[in-house]
Length: 301
Image (cartoon, rainbow, N blue to C red; front, side, top):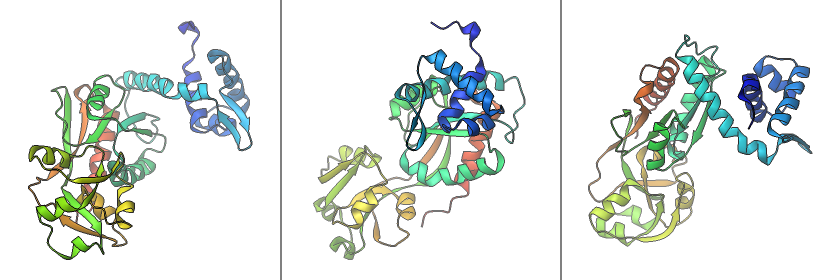
């Protein structure tokens, strides 16, 4: 085991910069050292980890497989250090190099990340955000263990240690291509169940089907939401998505949007975080960025 007394935190910062941009000169600028100094640091990193870390390819320098394995553990260590030190110092988003990790699904990413990144670009150019997708039980565990800073989702039943705030109201609807035969008449429950369906991940609509003992003809079962509109536009399949997602991906007016023909309450996309960060300055700032970005989104048509 490496002697931690000989570990320089700058090595980890340099490793993170090199993994974000495997170019020695540009990475040197990020951490504020000269190019020769960064080359020396890279040599120390190679000795520390016993691996070349960066190798030359036809497209320039690229991380080795060992380097890819180290990215998340090293960033996790840096996040923990920032959280410990951040409680002792004032937070200035314009100069902070804080790193946040969030849990979001692809729908949340599409809806929220443009506004979040715009605010970060304007107010906090050195702050970075890593987005991961985790199932609900793993998300709550990751919040508790500090593997992620916050999560955006819906329908969680969190323990008291996990806080949450509503971000966006939404509802599930049915989408089909605009020329679909079923788009020309009212969508009754019988007609809806007779159609051929795409099931996406494990959505809250599946809970309704199970509770009402309903079954449908599932032709395609997919894990990601964003591919669904493309499939629906070119087939006679239908699926159930959030209204906000449908609006976002119906700019070309190729989809017909219909209410689901059974009771479906509205729901809220929520922001979740651990209560230990209620008053953490950097964490509070990032949560406010997410809330403001969502508040700026237009209401669903």
